[in-house]
Length: 76
Image (cartoon, rainbow, N blue to C red; front, side, top):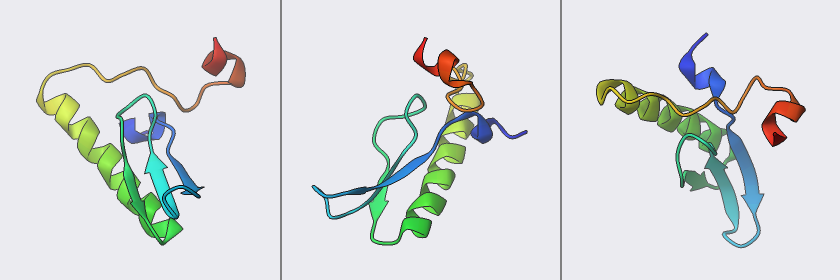
């Protein structure tokens, strides 16, 4: 399993911004945005991969995973 699979990736419509916004809470702040939901998701996946590469390159440990956990573990 790739490290990127351990992080939740959200793409949601923002009424405020008038576009889709992608984010990966727990891994990085910010994200990406655009008019096409699938393109935003593809870009988000690329950003997650690049962020993980930077963690590895800098010798830093990855943040705790946010995906693959049961709901009880997420809210604990």
